[in-house]
Image (cartoon, rainbow, N blue to C red; front, side, top):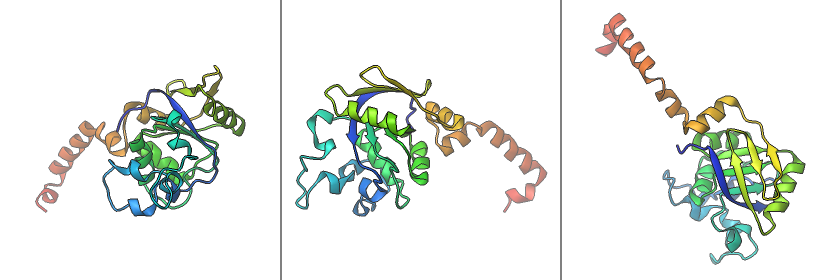
Length: 203
């Protein structure tokens, strides 16, 4: 998993609430367990019409938001069914951070397991960032160490994050990676267990 420390990136304003995981990555794109290529299906029904043509009114089709790494969006982002493909698709598109007033629990947890930083801010803060993202200068700075979001206007917003999750994000550790940091202790335990219960080794 790629560590998240500091990000300077364009912010795209997706001014919608209750965006569910089927809107983030529709079911027809869930036939793969590969993470690469899922950006094609990201927000598919919002980005494209029935003929597969890009909708000019959708923010991520706007050239000025090309290469956006931050998404500022409405309340309850990532609700609906559980699908890890949702953060995969966002990351494959190049989005490393999503800012909202709230996230669905399962989506929120999946973000941390994949290196996508979900930031929860107050409604006033999100609205201020949304307005700035809609302006001409919309490069935001996200700093995980200081837990801050800096907008082009100079406004700085602080966010809360669980210390354990913060440490794993900074180190680029998912659950497996965190376990492997204790490999020496695990190997020592296995060696002791093999001596104490050798019959288990023969099973």
